[in-house]
Image (cartoon, rainbow, N blue to C red; front, top):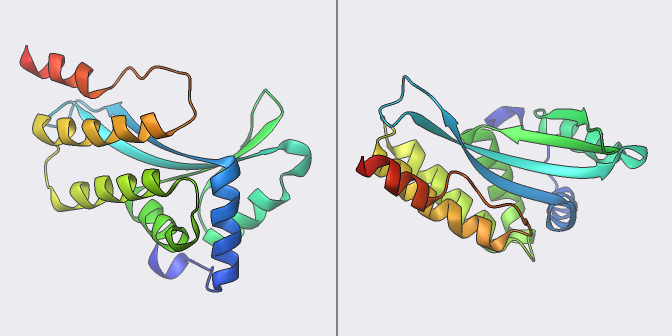
Length: 160
């Protein structure tokens, strides 16, 4: 993201971080990728949510970040999604000093990104390491869904 980041003032980052603490989420997903050694590719996603009648903050965030996808969901919510290791890392690092409630998720996601940026091949061993950290993020999140791609799932899959 580098030079595309347009937020410079700390008060903007503090506002974004506060919004993220309340109406944001951090996800680690595993996408099927046949070309990968492990058959999977981890994907980090930062999401911000708002009722579609009040979506201006999300539009402002997208403009400030210079990146992201805005979409209206069927449930009346607007969602801003940011994907990509570099983009997510930049946003998370800038929000981190101001995060109050999702500090653990941010630290764990940055740990995953750091690991992924150091490897050239996403091997089963790497997937297991990422899945273990991802499980910790899920435990910190407020989701009632059980995850398909957990550490346990990959452990069983790779033992075959």
